[in-house]
Length: 413
Length: 211
Image (cartoon, rainbow over all chains, first blue to last red; front, side):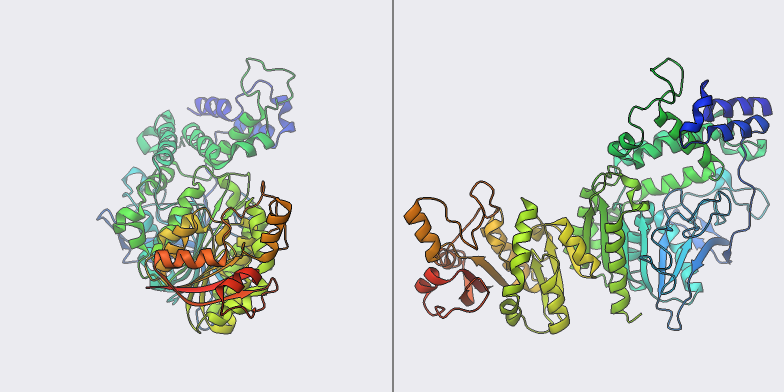
């Protein structure tokens, strides 16, 4: 078994006969090669994540009670005496609670370390910043990879969850800190969906909300791209009908392909062209060998680094939750979702984001205007695509920082 | 074109800021269309305790305003007013922008739908220097106020003070206050006579309400 494993992994992650040129691109294919030859690709070793357990758990939107419920989280800064300086950050599909620090598994820096940190737009010296792993995630919160009472992982038995379920789980955590009202809830992409859901479900608990690069619902195109990813996972023989852990396997190929497809949707055509163009990996001309273009190698690396930290069933669960999300269907209309809201909003989109285009953000803003909500909106000029919300975009950081500072000033924080 | 529109508005906004601010009652809900970097919004918030919001077409200006903590959206008068509910504001301000919008009549109608009062300022195309230049040289006028060539001006709907009175009459808007001002934003003495104001006023400022 192990040898077929290694072969599969070798094909997926190296996939090339000319890997002697691998040093020329950012993908450390040489490293991956050594790793694969020695052992099959396995998940990162488990580590203990800071967490809270809620014995009563949650009643999910699908009607299934989920108890007990574990919420893994990280916090930065200190909660003030009035408990009025809390900022909740919601992570995106493949993000986690390690927002502003080195990740304990991957060793990489925090995913929003350019936004959250001393002297930055969201400063932990001033705010108490909370970030929780979403319900259904795989960094310590209750999800398909976590074990049930009987000691076996949930796997495909994990119930269907919604974005609102994720938000309710976060609300339990926020309540456990004794925080009645969050100064701000911030998030991009799926994190932005959670922000919208927070404002719609718990308006009195959200003073300021910043949904970034998101939409009130997933479009048919969004769902279609997710479905390609899910199909890739399902068709991987190592998926074993979702019980891959029993065989000591992970559906690395399927999950890797899912990540590759998703990653294409996160980048703009300009960003891909600038990064790679049609550059060849050390070859002088196109040959019929695989993995000739640098962009291919890059995508393979994206897939390969991802499969070690992310659980396939978790990916299926969370992408479905995103697909189900439709705020206007939940409330009758989008404006109704924000009717009489006391929350102030900051909406931002990025000009080259085609996954969650500006038109979606503008529809949100118009619904908020229809509800006479206090809303700020900017479309940031960027050629980096959807990913721009995670990258160094000084205008975006200045605008978001100004919004949070304005909210803090209004509350006297 | 969008960029130049805004530089024009922002550059001139401060000079008539005081006149507009005088018309706003304390604590009012205000929407400033074409708010630039939000100078008026900030003033109204601080000095009048207003709940002031803005719409700005130029992205860089809008971003600056948002970064200053102001409630400003990137948008424009022609496309975004329709989404606000009736009577959402006490005052809706359109400062030196009317002549640059696509549908001035519809914009005014929307302003008085979503606001109790509309405050509108615009450069007066009936000013004597404009008339003189057109009459004498036979060319499109170039003045301090009308300073862009016909082929690149964002000011696609110029009007005179008398024209504006006529539109208000036609569409049933009540002129609560009006005045003509020079380019520095100082009140001119011709406010009792629309005819004289139309000849000597470089800027016009109107406060309107629905009938």
